[in-house]
Image (tube, rainbow, N blue to C red; front, top):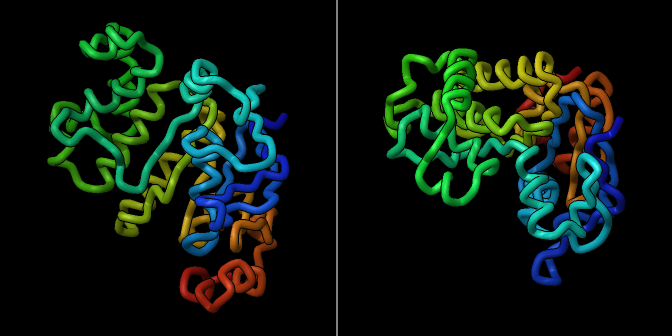
Length: 256
């Protein structure tokens, strides 16, 4: 059953820049999907349209029964509770501890008063520590986030997302700032989360080889249009060259 549906979605910025043009696809619950393409191809715009950080210019987007484009402010807040977001640059509060940042994933479920005073139930705190344990961060729980490595910070971001109890996690270039070893740790964690918790995951990735290793489905974008949508084993070198409109694919994958 589809948890997300894009129907003929277009997005234009400033009435001139066409970020997306007539994009249609659906994502089933529990899928692990990577979106690849060169910079400026519209990858991040797709994610921002899903959680309504930007409004689509045309078309329809449905998530978990909600009509995203027509939803009011109250409904969008409900939608965002179900969507975790993992960012390239982490978006943590560096002066706060790891456990405090993870607990921030519950803010969308609280009143503004409880959120402002930082009140969390004992059950929420217990759940936060369970998540930190799964992510190998128990010993860092009370460290300030500005004391962590990039890979540790990204794991905190994953933990914060899991505290939302999301049905969908959007990952916007989650390993772009990490070394290969840390990147593998992050992708392994997200793959396990997808399989064990049946949380749908959608990634924006520049690394074609990583997308092919972890994803069950790849969507290729060029100039705001989908030019490939299928399994990784059918993504040929010629198709990668079409997506990137250059030989860039040869630099980032060993596809035969």
